[in-house]
Length: 394
Image 1: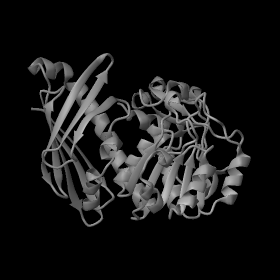
Image 2 (image 1 turned 180 degrees about the vertical axis):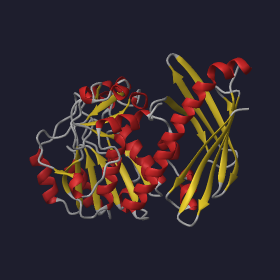
Image 3 (image 1 turned 90 degrees about the vertical axis):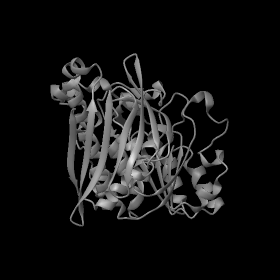
Image 4 (image 1 turned 30 degrees about the horizontal axis):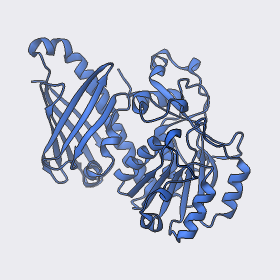
């Protein structure tokens, strides 16, 4: 029976590495963005008896993959066993082993069998190995970089954070990253669908009954610039203890209302708490991760021009959240020329699998590049960003 194993030494103590896997958002952070994956149902976390059912789509073919969790040992391991799915057998053990006090080895050990016996192994064996090489390289890098950012930027703090606004996909990615870092996250998105937009200006928490979460939050991250003054006013009226507000632009939909720099400058000048507004005209992401969750009107197939990768948008947001000296209008667009004509052919061939989420930022805004304040992007070039999103395929 074939066995696949991937090992990586991660610069974090073993208990912290294992805890990352147990927290809300771990699956969302590990789901490969180049695959058409949809969570059908989820019962429990990773403890014995928990189940996760996925739908995997390749072209017109949809496959259900149901996994049962077992062999859970706190701080050490857990196993996913396929109950139904594309493999004849699949047992995936996630294991963590300490390397001294400050480092740990992450081990993904998979025992599997392909359908159709010897013929299936002959025809599908090389493909299965390439798939797992790509998947686990992506997963190990993401775990390492997420933990590295939580340590270097977050410095072990645990915050109560409310996420609100109108870009559900980006908010979901932010929530997953923050949740795996041990922060308490409440997500209150409103709809991006113009057919279901609220009839009056709404910034999220006005649509939900849980004002206690808003009032007790340490920070608020909001998607949408036009209603930033209303959000800041509401926080003051509710007596929120949130010392920090991070605002990002919403999707550039036909019905969206633009906001001027003058209006943002006025809101910042009147703010009674620290406010950082992160600006970029576009976010690069893999198309399979976006399909069905973002209106097509807000997507561009071209990756030419100014943009930022989704992981570096998350990182810049976290940097602004955690550094009390960061405030005002900040440009998070990566300092590079984004042109497909300059890409190596091995990278350019993947461009059609990517999309750019168009965001509604003020035109010609005078903003401070966030990299000049100490933020370091994970993927500083367009080629790096593309390869990170499609998993460095061999």
